[in-house]
Amino acid sequence: MSVLDEVYREILLNHYQNPRNFGVLPEASRRAGGMNPSCGDQVEVMVRLEGDTIAEIRFQGQGCAISTASASLMTEAVKGKKVAEALELSRKFQAMVVEGAPPDPSLGDLLALQGVAKLPARVKCATLAWHALEEALR
Ligand code: ZN
Image (cartoon, rainbow, N blue to C red):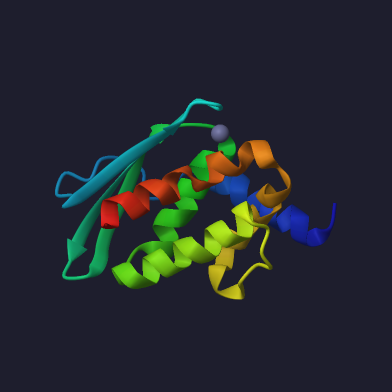
């Protein structure tokens, strides 16, 4: 395992064991959920918009390490961003894990999930929270 793989593994483990922005957002203005029957992952994403800025975001649900870490990383990545910026980030992230596109450096810690592109059975785990986010924002 390369040093970079080890760093990515630790980021994922950290977010799985200590998910960020986890819980209910009572004042949510948008919410959407989804599930991934093949793995048993469930997620609900709650967003509070201020104008077109994601002022607050939280998620709840249960799932495997990849789905939980991806949801946690997603909330950190899009909090404080404009809706259009969040959707662009979602597009870049999905290009990386679904299509195996060269990772965009602007993805930051989300790059830790790039290895999922080589694990077809786990792609839906990694994209679950992002699909819910897109639905909530649209
Ligand atoms: Zn899963």
